[in-house]
Image (cartoon, rainbow, N blue to C red; front, side):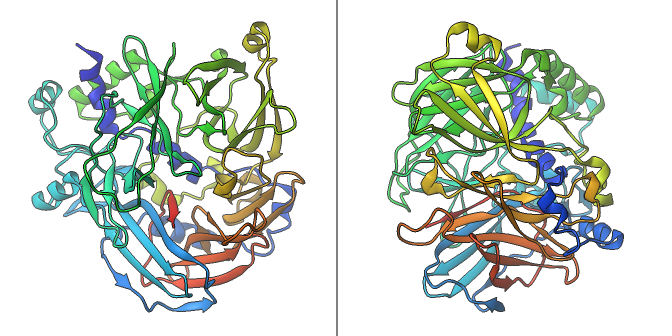
Length: 547
């Protein structure tokens, strides 16, 4: 049986969702600065239990508002739309989805007009799967784990016949390429939406001859000139990565599909799971962690799915092989050639912060990532998460690290690990790292992230954190009984300081059982404004501010 036929089952799983789940549910090791904040805000056991329920309670109602309550003052220069994405609908009729990432995607749009006024709207992402579910009044299409109830013979027949309902539940991130806005996961099928309105327009077609691929990054990078850069992973007899770019178009461009241009094809002996990647002005950096695709595990999982109807998930399709170490594969953007492969000890990361060539020494490439000692995969079933997602016993300490790659190192140093050194920028508390995008691929100083409580601070609540990567100083924002989501940095107009701007985050308040959008001064981390929403928003994943 051709691997492309078998791999169809993998694509339907919605690769990489658990990566985001793990980063949200994992608690990071507390720093000294964090300990100083514990008395400011704590979460009782009752609040923790209530919060765990609210984070995974469905929101189906779609609304549109321009007169919501505001405390503080929205900056008059703020102009554009913050779009947030995440699972939102967890039941269809009387049936409940099993897994968090089965939840149907919902987009939330916060549009600011540049005069201090705003509008909010939210819509479920209109996909083939959602339409099928609603028409049947029950689960009618394959999702990340859940699927329609089928007997043994129907499951066998499903191996040899293509799915009539494509997997389109793009509930991880949003991006823009070639003038089009789209929602995405790590399956290379993007769902276009319009702005303003966050109304889905259907799947985007690719007008090129490149392979579709089996996985893609949920974190494409847009350069300063609007060029979209990303990659797809292709499984086969010879695994490889295809790095590509999409040239910029005027926003609102709707003619035809998108055309990807190949930057380079990179063969690899082990197809690694990579949720994101690094990009400097000169290089694409694929950090191949030792969590490798395993064909035997995939076949075994496929067989069990047919025999029992149970899907064991991504953890059984990849294999953690720390003895193979981590490989920093550095590819030249100019011609797609591999500059070098540099070995390092085993490590794992979901999110990159930035990558840049040292301006004082062009032979050094710095790659900053939120790292863990190994890959981890928790039970992300809705039943488990609702029981208490904030349980400190599930904590996984992490560190924001800077890896320095000696680009001109000899072959022996590259293979031995001597060409890659690392140092800790922050001991924990900086997941979902974001930067001022004007410094993408360049030397930078500030990182904003989401801090989660560690085992030693089990009663502390999540917070937003700003790190000065040069001094190690951190500043935080947190509020009692509240759970902030990913912070999105928006720079102020002009050529101001690197941290001159605002940080925006959707925050769930367990006391009011509603959410609000908080706008912080990104430099001081002090609250500037707060927009109260008429409902709660379930735990979301990623977002972007489109200007």
